[in-house]
Image (cartoon, rainbow over all chains, first blue to last red; front, side):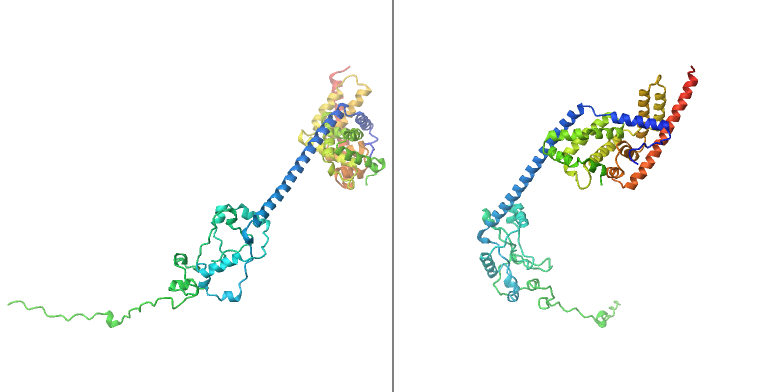
Length: 253
Length: 207
């Protein structure tokens, strides 16, 4: 039972010792100076806590303001893009897939004009997400201008990413994309950028070009030069006929 | 759950005082301090065996009460149980940080010193007995000492003590039984040492 002596009641010495201990404990009290000390410490702790709370609230407020400012900046950058330059990429139709590959190269004037028409086409711009805006804003302008934005689908067209900035809005030079022809793994194939642009619909002239411009890397027997026939060796040809031995001239007598 | 504290009926006032003190009312905090400082100081002194340490712990307990008032959940425990829990944790931390309690050899040496006092009166004898019990109590492991202090000195019920130490009532009963056995054993050894030292004194200093 609580409140009883933890020692044996029949042990007189222990009972007396426990009673003396309880009396001593009950008589013990904190000194009166402790109250003022505790009050001072509590006041200091309270002020410190209030200061820490105020600092935390101030940091939270600044974080919120910074987030709002960043969002506004991203929205302003997006809206400053000329002509609402963000347009969805038109899906590839079966008709467009039937267009010969050579006419879809950016080197051709027709493809370039179609690209320009795509860019200038008015439409409802796709909103830029915060992550995309952050990526765009973090990219240095020279790097952004010199960045070759090619569509990995065909390797030639410009990437029509939503929210792609036009450098004209920042007063910088417009970076024209370099046209790169597909080589399909042929490392030594000459690039079409170094050549004159082919007329639309024109077929490739050389065998290498025909091989490299195909949609799939297949073997084209027409493009391969016919190798010279190998020489046929026969047995009688292999062993040459020895020349007829003539008698040596008779010695002079 | 807390029969003792529920009967006392001061818990809502304690909680209200704590809320006002948290909002910066130092008068409410002083009222709260005067209401609980006695038991806080006694418990800390019984656990550490030092009045100086008990003063430090008392101050720290009330500062913690003020700064971490949000941790107190009235649905989980009574306010006094919460205060006892803080005192217990701080006392254990203090004892662990400083040197452990006196060994049995130290107890025996102290007992001989106590017995070697000449011309003992009843008052001095009582102080000596109390000191012997205090030292024997300090030599116990803290898991036994805290329960003996809470249940046998502060008259807490088993349920309240279980809430303070965070154990079940069965564990509290078991630890209390074991602690009392240990305390009896150590007090008996101290008394035997006193008797032996008294015989020595008689031999060495015959009248």
